[in-house]
Amino acid sequence: MKIRDLFERIIILSGQFLIRKNSIEMDVERFKLLVEQGLAEYSKASPHTEETTVDLRGDRTIKFTNSNSPNIDGVDLGPPDFMSACDPVSMRGTFLLGVPEGNRAHSYNPNLDVKCNAPFKFNRRSKELTVGTPANYALILGYYHRIVKIEEEYEILTLDLVRDSVFVMLIQGMFLQGIGKSRRAFTLNDLPIAMDAAEIASEGDALVDIARDKVENEEHKFYLAYR
Image (cartoon, rainbow, N blue to C red; front, side, top):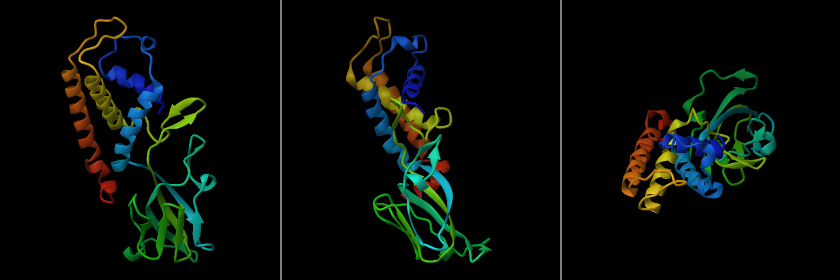
């Protein structure tokens, strides 16, 4: 998701569909601040996850770096922010179809080192995973959504304009809230587009409330359980 594309989508969804895109100039840095605020909120309930497996039958510790972390479209995501699953899948050449609950590791605490059910531990500061039993492990790595700069273009690699419509709604609501609070009434390039600030802010409030309700529905229940 490119920040510029997100801005254009927000303008269209906000009712300015009769205005040519080149008649609106985006302040990239200001809009980026608004998006970063929305990402911080959205990431709490709907972070990005990547599934991978690691061989820890020899060295029982792995330190995540850019070189051994997942990538999207060739861009490294880097070490994970947290780990939501750490399950042994094979041990001494035997595939574990049913792993006892005591050997499974599920944890999510962004403020502390993630200590799984012994003997697993993921240190969020050093980005090291340590296991007590040599085995192959299936991991679910968690990432907070971030803005990255690729070839002079700001992007959010972990979000998609179409798929992540709830996030787009959240940003649209925040965008309208900002407009409503910043001025009493406004025009754009001398065009007859004027609305009462309270009306704009009210519409923004409604969109933000709807988006927050959608984020915290059953679809995201897994992550909310570990907040």
